[in-house]
Length: 555
Image: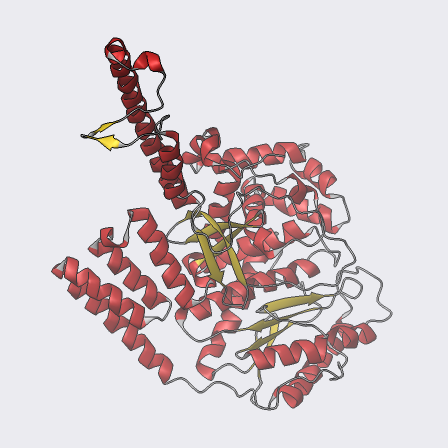
């Protein structure tokens, strides 16, 4: 999970919460059918005491009028009524247990382990081939499967499919094939082989596609195994008393001490000095981190990296594609320059080096992070630092997503002025740009659609997010993405004008009013909900069925 670190003094807004039912730790169901059955049995206990004689009840404690010959008919009517009540009660219990079982598939409790090191426990409210949405402590989260640890993703996917089918023995051959292919995408061949074997037992025709999938996986693994060994983290363990050196921000501040605040660009001579400062800083990075750190230079970026040589060209390709896309979106000419000189980017392939750089040069603790952007409003400096985890195709896709996301922050920081803009707009635009550049290789769009559907189905509030200007949590990025996408769909010129107003210092409410024909926060939310509803026919049915939404709340 990517975290953006910036300097700010803005307090975080209060977080709207959604209610969830109370569940004991470790419980996997909201209501247990056994409890329902036990209550029914108590309700049906006979209202008398006695023994069994000759196959019938001896009603010792019944009133006297019911005994003897004259009470025979009354006794018959009484037991007839009790039998009817028993049948009705058991039928109601059966319906109740079916309803509970249906609800359990929507409220299954799971443990999620993230690749960045975090962990969450909560209830699943929706899941697809792309990912899942869960609610933890009143907060909704959406995760693509690629964001989970591989083993955790495979077992969670299997558990959810099993619940969906009604039992593991009801999984079809096609289900097991899907699980096997899913496991291979996450690099878990052992899990895949077990799934493929089960698919073959159920349907022999599935053996051949399973063999083809395994063969492709092994070919890819052989290519990866021939890659250069990872850079060593030897002697890179930072000490607690390690001194933080002056970073790029401080060095550029010295070069541009006399430049007026928020000036679009320094003079040509100053830009030349800035570029020289960047290169000298790169030499210092090589001295501290390792001599295998090299510079990859493109038209708008200076990229220092310890990546394997055959992968380095991807870095320039991704960054320049991002720059070109954003320049087009905001109507910039090919000759327009956004950055002070060229934007410095630092790409690492081990946690040791990533943490060492962040601590040594920026004074940051990047535990559980895989990337950050450091941007300084006063002097306009910005640089990006990133970590690549692994070298599978999924690892590179995840890195590219983070690179484009953080690179978009760097671009927007320098766009028009260096004034910071509301964070939900900034984060939403970064996610939208990653989706546009990387397409199917980036799950940002699917994350946004999946989370937005839950907000509309269950009428969860977004008003606090819309009105906020300060930092937002990572789990709100997909929601911000969905809202920003709606604004941009109204026209790129409108959206560019909206961003320009924010960069010029206009309030968020005023910028909406100016660029979108007097649009208010309430009208924006209504339009957003309507847009999401049109893409999700089930949303109205979910919203109307309050019995399925015990934790939903408006507000």
